[in-house]
Image 1 (cartoon, helix red, strand yellow):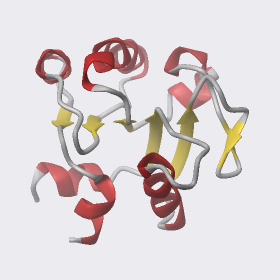
Image 2 (tube, one colour; image 1 turned 180 degrees about the horizontal axis):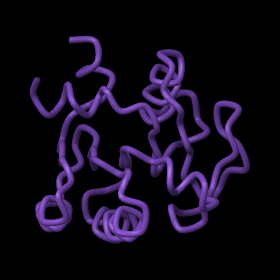
Image 3 (cartoon, helix red, strand yellow; image 1 turned 135 degrees about the horizontal axis):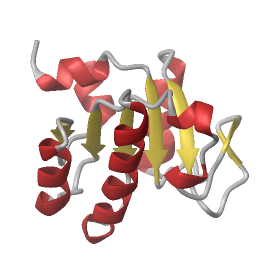
Amino acid sequence: MDEVETVLGYRVLAIVGLSRNPEKDSYRVAQFLKSRGYRILPINPNAEEILGEKSYPTLKDLPEDLKASIEVVDIFKRSEDVLPVVQEALEIHRKYGRLKAIWMQEGVVNVEAAEEAKKAGLIVIMDRCMTVSYTH
């Protein structure tokens, strides 16, 4: 089993940068994953709720029980904005140990953030769409 298959086997995803706009890729990907039984935790400071799930401004703002349940942080942000997100994710990883992977969506590449996550023992997928990977 390769790393992509491994990560797709995890079921609890914090989706950072999840848009409320049904036209946006992040919304369509989250909707698809939710329809396949994934638990999605929307992270968007400008939304109260997305796809019927309570949205949180940042990973740090998640309640402790949800932080402890995250297996994958899926990032829809500009590449230059990824490092702080990964650093928040690593804090959660150190505290709870359940987080297994960082997934940067298609077009999102941050080598420095990827290296930090890999050093912490996480799987890192960069510049790939989770939906496309799921369906192929």
